[in-house]
Length: 141
View (tube, rainbow, N blue to C red):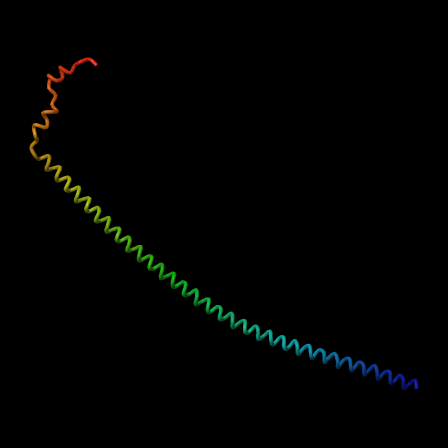
C-alpha cells in the first residue's frame, strides 16, 4: 500500500501542477486578450487622434492663410492711401508755392512801379527841418 499511496500522491502532485499550468495559461490568455483589446483600442485612438490632428492642421492652415491674405490686402490699401495722400499733398504744396511766387512777383512789380512814379513834394515838406525851427527849439531841458 505504501507504493500505491506514493503513486497516488505523485499523480495528485502532477495533476495539481498540470491544473496550475492550465489555469496560468488561461489567465495569461485572458490577460493577453484584454491587452490585445486595449492595444487595438489604443491603435484606434491613435488613428482617430492623427485624423483629428490632420483636420486641425488643415483648418489652422486655412485660417492663417486667410488672415495673412487679409493683412496683405490691408497693407496694400494703406500703401495706396498713403501714396494718394502724398500725391495730393505734393500738389497742394506746389499750388501753394506757385501762388506765393505769383504774389511775390506781383508785389515786386508794384514796388518797382511805385519807385518809377514822380514823388509828391508835399509829403517831404512836413519832414524837412529848417534852420529856423532848429534854432527856436533850443530851449534847455
